[in-house]
Each structure stands twice: as C-alpha cells, then as structure tokens.
Amino acid sequence: MRKSARRNPLRRSSLTHKPDPAPGIIDRLKDRELEDLYVNLQKLEEANKRIIKDIKKFSEGIQSLSKAENKLINDLSSSASCNKNEKFRSVVEEYITVTTEMNKTVQDTSKVCQKTVIDPMKKYNSEFSNISSYIHKRDSSIVDVKKLEAKLRKLQDKEKSTTNMAKQQLLKKTLEQAINEAQVTHNKLLEDLSIFHELRGQYLTPSLHSLIQTQADYYGKTVQLFTHLSNMSTENTAINTPQRLSEKKAEIDSKLNAIRALAIVGGPGGQTAAS
Image 1 (tube, rainbow, N blue to C red):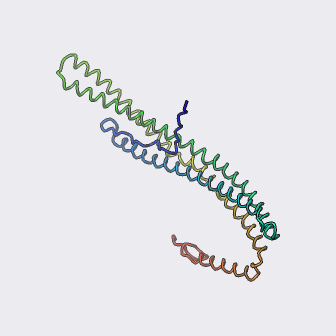
Image 2 (cartoon, one colour):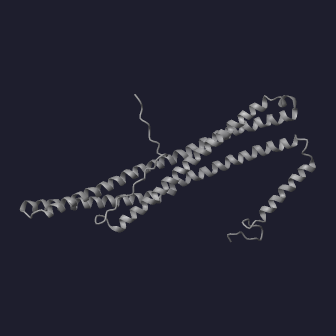
Image 3 (cartoon, rainbow, N blue to C red):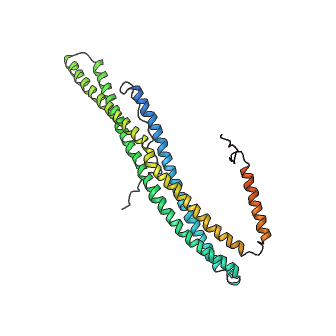
C-alpha cells in the first residue's frame, strides 16, 4: 500500500485567498483592516519561508565545501609531490589539521542553524496554516448570512400570507443571530491576527540574532584557520623573499588606502555619504 505524500509547508503558501468582503454585514473599516492585515501576513509568511530556504542552502553549501576539501586532502596526500617534497608535505599536513578543525566547525554550525533557526521558524511557519483555517471559518459565517438574506428576499417576494409573514419573522431572527455571530467571529479574528503580527519580532528576533552570530563565528573561524595556513605556505615558498613580502604588504596598504578614500567610508575628521 502506497503511503500518501506529506505536504511540504515550504513549497506552497497557506495564505492564498483573501478574506471575502462583507459589505452590509461587517463594518467597512473593520473589513478593510482585516484585508490590510492579511496582506502583511502574506508578506510575513513568504519572508519566513525564504529565510528557511536560504539557511538550508547555507548549511548545505558549507557541508558540500567541507566534503570537497576532504577529497582534495586525500588527493594531495596520495600525490607523488607530497612524498617527494618535504616542504609541500608539511603544508599538506597543516592543511589536514585545518580541514579537520573546519569539519568540526561545519558540523557545529549546521546543528546550531537547525536548532536555533530552521526548527523554530518552521514551527512559526505552521501557524499560517491555522490562520488560513480561521479565515475560512470567518468566510463561512459570511456565506451563511448571505444565504439567509437570499432566502428572506425570496419570502418577501411571495404573497403576504399569515404563514409567509410568520416564516419571515422567524427567518429575520435567525438572520440577526447569524449576523451577530459573523461579526463576533470577524472581530475575534482581527484581534488575534493583530496580536500575532505585532509579536512577530519577539519570536523571530532571537533566531535571526542566532543566525548572525553563527555565521560570524563560522567565517571568523574560517579566516583564522586559513590565514594561519596561508602564512605557513608563504614561509615555505621560496619565491616569497622579504622583498616580495614587502611588495605584498605595500599592495594591501594601497588597496586599503583606496577604500578609506571612498565617499561611503568615514575617516577621522571626515564625513560619510549619509551624513
């Protein structure tokens, strides 16, 4: 027996149908307020989905890079040059040490991304499906009112008999009750969605802070390890004489001075483009 495929909430949006307009049933301003709020929630759902997808790509990307470096290490270690050239072998061995440390960093980074960013934001994303259900319930109450209104109009078009008038009175009471229930449902939905939207920052900000810190730690560690490896490689390369190293430093200083001269960079006593 085939198992039914589980719906991936990240592939399809939950908020795809705006609340039905209800002129004459719901106050016009409150009706418009719900419509505007719905648009904001749609944007929030899409933004949330994009962040989850981007973090997954980041995590998959650094893991793929780690696998590629491990393959490169294996190829270098088994090469003839590594066995014949002592300086080259020394650099490869140091590269192995760096890669081993980076493998651990990648795994730690991926775990943190999953636990502190992806999982909480997936849970948050599931709320949009509930919101869609609440909106459907509100719309159903509006449909019920419209059906009763249509039924009442038909009775009013018929001959005014005692039986007909009695039915109209009964239907009017039912209609009045249905309108009241629709308004209560609408107002409650508007209140709950407003609170949900207003509190988005309190829920999402910790995840975003964690993401920034995690990526900063990852890139910081990467720079630290590979800078050390680069320095060691430079020391073991014959062409990097003191004169050549001095030329490299002068080249870097020149580029830094060019960056400092840009209008968008504020220097001592200078102004930025935004000021």
